[in-house]
Length: 393
Ligand SMILES: C[S@@+](CC[C@H](N)C(=O)[O-])C[C@H]1O[C@@H](n2cnc3c(N)ncnc32)[C@H](O)[C@@H]1O
Image (cartoon, rainbow, N blue to C red; front, side):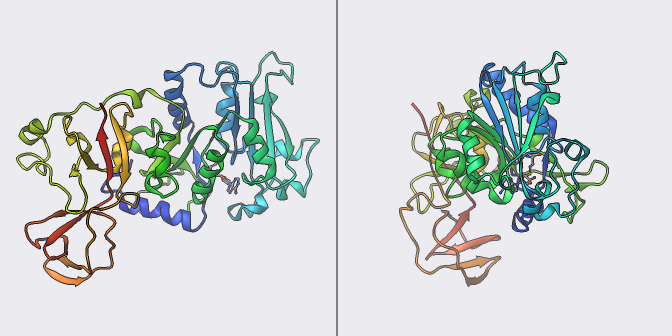
């Protein structure tokens, strides 16, 4: 999802994380597109399942509404959503209970602010209108604030078969750990930068989690409660939505795209015909400090190379586990064959000290030309974030 030109937007998502702005509401069409990918692969993926939607609230979130609408055709056994207490959420200081809550016999003015809520839909026509839908949703206050790590929500996690949500961006890593420790099926939204996080990457490498179908055109739109300070082009006044290009679905539910092999040319054909000038007539340099070749574009991966290859992280959007094995990432979990002594960075011919460590891929360069090079006794060029893959079979 990440593209070379989305730096400012990526930085913005980072800033949202730093300020713990977790209020980004998922669009119905994005939920539908992702769930359809799982259903196309396995029409019974949700049948007889208990689905938990934590970090949610049907009063403002589409997840509960979406699954309530599909309760019967998906064949759900039970749908549970939990919401987070307004008092625990710094972005919800002016919270006013809705009429749905305040006119309910269960309403409690203190708990409305201090407690989370639990919403349950089962195959019971509670209002006796002949349908099972959101009108049959039952709710109660939780004992605590609805933090996903609480005993209460953790017990609901344990009861559930599948956990689906857009969790708080600032808590993505602990949220994922909370899912993984329970060994549950899940589908959650997060920053695509997370793929190389120390806590996240091993799950992807070991095929325990992968990217979902993803957002249309790589653009994720979220509703936000207030306009906020967003970088140019992120917030749209007309729609009230923010647009991020670096969001992904992380899941362990299967879908068809991960079984489509990438259509690739041989090494010789790439060198002859590649549309990329970096490859055509040039080939694939060997890293200076790692036993692999550098492949700068996913569509330039040679179909017939048997050794290790360093590829851009966007490869994950196309990964088919029957075609390639993911071996490591340049962000820390591989061992370079060579480490360098103190380095000098050379930017446009000017030598300066470099604090950059040697955990990265380097290729030899002919000279200290334009761009950033490192002087390790000869010029090398640092290559940004690579995954190491190997052909299967
Ligand atoms: C990114 S928003 C997504 C909301 C909704 N799931 C959706 O996609 O429209 C994450 C929500 O998590 C809630 N939240 C924040 N911290 C939480 C925590 N520790 N435990 C549970 N929920 C939390 C916030 O109230 C916020 O609305």
